[in-house]
Amino acid sequence: MKSMKTISYLVCAALTVMSVYANDDDVPPDQLFSPDKNFSVKMLPTPMPGVDADTYSDTLVVMAKDKVLSKQATMGYLLRAFWTADNNYVAVDNRRGNSGDYLWVFSLKNGHALRVPDDNAIQPFVDRVVKKFPECASHDFFKRLTEATSWKSPTELLVKTNISFEKIDSFFVITDTYKVEGAHLVLEADSIEKKPLKL
Image (cartoon, rainbow, N blue to C red; front, side):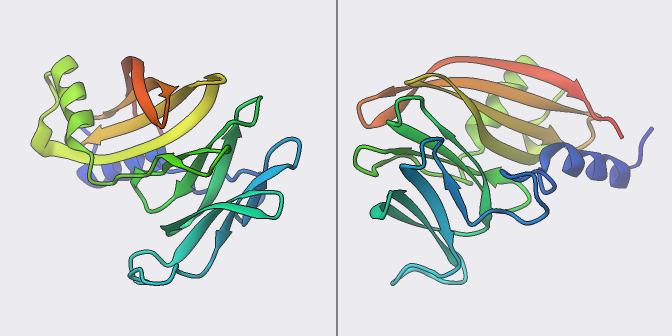
């Protein structure tokens, strides 16, 4: 049986994406552009006025060419951005820690944030896994990682959440399909898979 230290290492390896950046370089990008270069998301290494700089040390900016559509207090760095073919929406993966919620979704019509990361919204994900896989216990929750993976259609976004538990040599992948409805994302379909941890 693997030691807890080994299991923790495997979980971290499975859930983190530190070596994968949007431009495949060793340094994360400070700006990502839409394919037509008309829109971009930029990470500024300065806090927004009036926010706790110890918590939110950076600013995420969504732009239409040189026009600022939205500014959001955040931290960390950009991983990747997924643009809809019609340039109506962008999903942004913003690494904010070793686990948690990395996903922002913005309307490019007005800069409205349809989704903001919520590191505290853990229990609903844990409950879904525990319901399907009774060998998991809610109190053994270890880590969660939520990111976008692609746009299935101009209004349907695929989102992946990895969940791990202590004492289990597996991790769980929740794949959700969200549909844009007005100014919100609505869950349309979901699936959960159990996958083995491997070195």
